[in-house]
Amino acid sequence: MRRYESSYFNSATPGQGYDEYLNARDNWLRTFNRRLDEARPYITAGRVLDVGCGAGYFLEAASQRGFDPYGIDLSDFIVQVAQKKFGDRIQQATLESAPFPAEHFDFITAFDTFEHIYDPLAFLESASRLLKPGGVMMITTPDCESGLARLSGRHWVSFKIPEHVFYWSPPTIRQAMKHRFKVLDMRSAAQYASMSFLVRRLFRIGTSPAPFLQPVLNIVSRINIYADNGSLTVFASRL
Image (cartoon, rainbow, N blue to C red; front, side, top):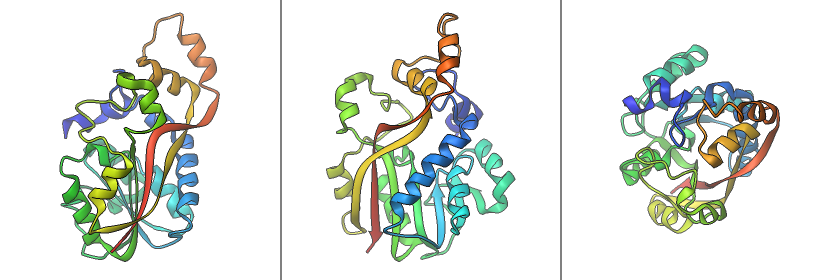
């Protein structure tokens, strides 16, 4: 889809896409290692499929821990980036069209992806088909009942139309997963990010800020913190 081409991963428009994604590999690796730590009670090895894999940062972290990594993404641009490291283990596809046999994976992840899906029940059905019995799914998606969402109101950073087409909460995700998955855990999500990224997201400042702001952003860009991002992480096992 054209929306997810190169400009999406280096967006100059406040409130759209990512404005630091390709330059923030270290913070994404740190984030995904934390998420793998969270997943440890439920799964520690096996074949993993990352849906909406982007440049493959999660797959880098997972492969370093012994997982057998695969990824899919809609963006032709970012698939080509990920294929430089993972070759044809990365495919341009949706979960419904992914070229894998049934019960092929032990672990399916979808980080910042579920909110983009036009038919989430079909998505979950495909995930159930591709997972082995008892296989684990991990979803991280904006939580419209989070403290950050309530505090921010209509200025919540995850209100990104038309990118985000569904907004989830713990009760609605439980209902969507019913009959396909057993929910194992739900918790608030966080990520490592530079202070400049957080300031720009919070105040919807683009990548070409006013001249008086740039020196300040340059300074705080050296500070990285692990911050609650108003999202929800769900662990579930296939029934």
